[in-house]
Image 1 (cartoon, rainbow, N blue to C red):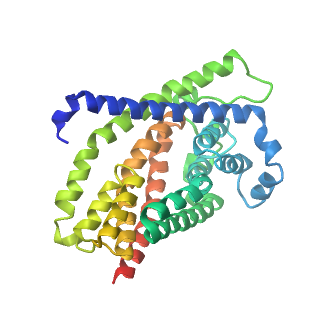
Image 2: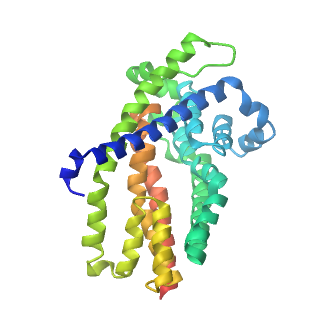
Length: 330
């Protein structure tokens, strides 16, 4: 798609539909996180589990958020933001705590993902799904190790209690959480509205930029990368599968299934193509799903470190999984 397509009604209709879905997800995450904190349901529902995690060196606020992430990661992240604003956890705890939410959230939906993947792409789809859950589990263990040894990474204000380490401007602009039985009613609604008005513009902006750049990114890989001799480890049919992942994982699985049925790819190359596509989509997924939301709920100075650790832990394991899949094709 060229830049001229930005002026077509179809582009804006599609973008608006996607932004509405994003808006619903953000609103749900913030409202649910606020309600969960106020209700005390985490302490009641997971009473036996939170103390056990706390004995392992994980703050009870982070432990509670990880358990809530089994349902959804967005309200869990909002809970961490509120705990940080209240001075309960440090910057390192909220950073690595936020990264630890991905595995519980993915674990809940993995069975469905694996079933769909196997149904569309057969053995290649199931191997791909298995690789994703193993990789996500390894990343979770890695992040927990970082979380429990957070003092190794503390520098200055990062080791201080959150409130004491905040600048006056950050402290004034941070949405404070409420306690059960206190600060309810109008004050709570105003606080939630403030967080929504901070989060949504960032989320809308990052999503729109990524959405507009998707055709150019797709062209880069299909016409430049695939044609380059430096990337001959994957045949052109494999690159077609990888690039289709930019649209949706289902599109990549369908493309892989078609290539397998036509005999253009074998199972090992199909798995490699799917994993490459997953890594290609990492940056766009981060921009669409994470950065805008993080910018809205966490202090601005925290986001660069959170983004750096997110990409480092994610991309390094993705590269390892791709290298192992490539060795399987030899």
